[in-house]
Image 1 (cartoon, rainbow, N blue to C red):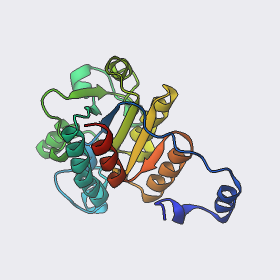
Image 2: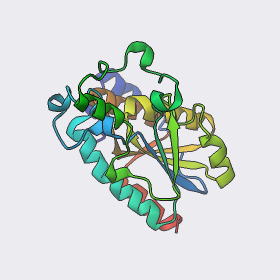
Image 3: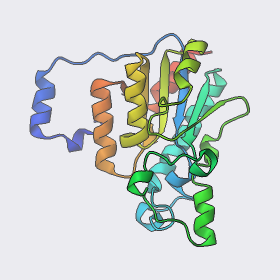
Image 4: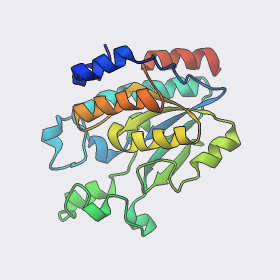
Length: 235
């Protein structure tokens, strides 16, 4: 049973049964792990149910995010153990760049910080959390749009390194992960989305965006299968 099965309608199931099965895109010759937006704004300072953390961290993903982070830590370890490149993407703060982010025009998700505590959380919002923290020498890209490709040097870096496959983890499945996967496939990259290592705020959009990406743009696979592939192919 796949994560999206409970959300499919009878017509959806009938259409899938009558359609030709899509063959997986599969892996290419050289892979890298792309860790997207595993930062403080998405998970807060500790595991809490999503509604409890809402006032302090309006963009938090609750316990789902923390569960995924434990898996992401395992994925990154497997990548490093097999000399697989790890690339990190996080937000580009307006106070650093002078440019408002893509969500600024709609006011973001929270009001302007007022108290010292709110200002501190705002300052730390794009801080990559410990479970997904970069190691020295790993590429870290800052972006101010959903896709890790948009106006960043990610694509030329992949070309220079001979990387044709991206193994994707992080959040949000319905936002920055999806935007990156669509752009990656547009560049004809093999996009592997690790089901256990991606997360979102809303359960339905989490599941159905995974379904949609698996149908069109990449392969949604388990952490176990990715680790086994890395150990067999990337050493």
